[in-house]
Image 1 (cartoon, one colour):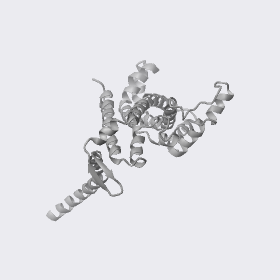
Image 2 (cartoon, one colour):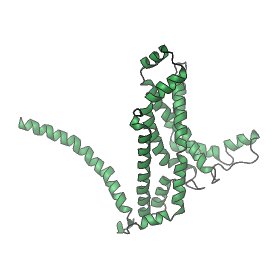
Image 3 (cartoon, one colour):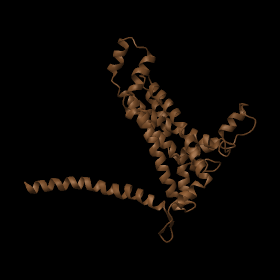
Image 4 (cartoon, helix red, strand yellow):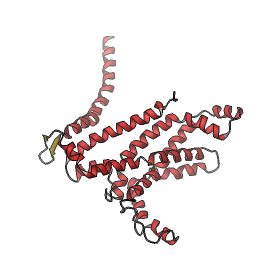
Length: 291
């Protein structure tokens, strides 16, 4: 009996120990190491780290591109409410039982499964000075000269934001569609029997019951907007005032080889992500009903 218990304990600790070990190696150690590097001047060639205290943070706060990156991720948050609104609207539309609706669901989801490189390169061609968008607008007489969608410092970040919005719409639509289909049909039938109209059903039943899904979508879309990198890297490479925090972290580490400052930016950015996650939880009441 004792041998049997030991075998059970061994199996339990084996199943717990291996995932915890992997989590420690690939998650917790990099976090601790990153925080440590933020207080050092790291030499990649020698593999040495010299302790410099808060010098990396001071250098970061003196860099004008750091503030540009902060402004850009705040601008990117504009995408979040729009993408959630239109995703819910699309989910409600494609949740209808009409012929060919599966085709439209697939059509909206295609940008999600398309590679980010392909999507960005396609939109880069569309936004180019002699690209499809300018060509169309010129032929329609809506503009008199080509617009610099990706090189104008006032437009470039918004062009990148549009690509993010376009690509993410189908992803959140599918999540909301799953949430809608999990709402019991009995609830809708009871509401209709009680004389509720479409507007009352939407605001009194559908949206309140979607709050857990909305919480999840708002959190991941907020984090995705703050962590945007691929669109910026592939469309503008951070030029024209489009650098975001993720791009700045990449630029410091792998372009300028200032790993300490990059680590300091990562630490600050982690706190920003944590703050916005807490705000989302507070706003949606942890996915439950407001008191």
